[in-house]
Length: 249
Image (cartoon, rainbow, N blue to C red; front, top):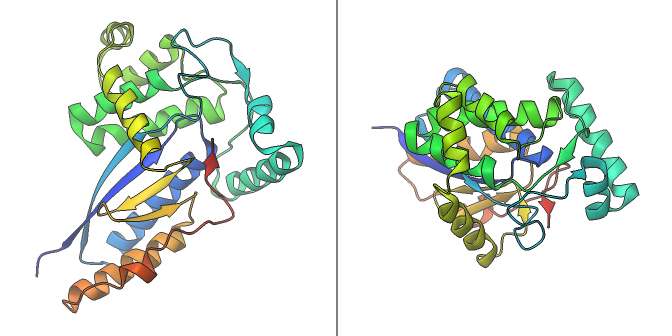
């Protein structure tokens, strides 16, 4: 029997720490399922754009800049933000990924345009290295994801294109309409927070889920695939919230 193909669409924003956590946990779960559990599954992943700072709030000139701490305090309130900060720092210490709330938050259209370009060039095999690098420079190094110099350096680092080619792309409007349409479509469909992971276009999980949650889901998918049964999706795939909840607008 051929492997079951699991199609994953992850709606994210590149300024969102929980999106970085969710991506890390999802990839860890996929690796565990394939290499350790040997599940009869193949995975197709695409990351789709969402903007926590919409164009209606910050126009395309990407000003004014907002400090990360101020941005998230304004969204959550001081007490909830401090709880979120402690939770993320604890996760980072456990995983060896030192996420930090330093630097500025900018509207993420430019970074999303490069993400779409990466997918167009090489699918998830190009998009994932790009996203990993963006999360590193933004959430660990505190760099600005709207800065064309930062973005073009990342594009060159992951081999997507040369720095000069990336700068030319970023100074054009290529893929801007696509990103705007995809962000608008997500909101129209009721997405108000990210990350949101959609399985096979039908079932959604909200928030930065742990790898254990994904492993449980993929294991059940593999089990019903091997038994040639219809999966119990209404119960299995009900959206849930973990300790790392979705960042809402």
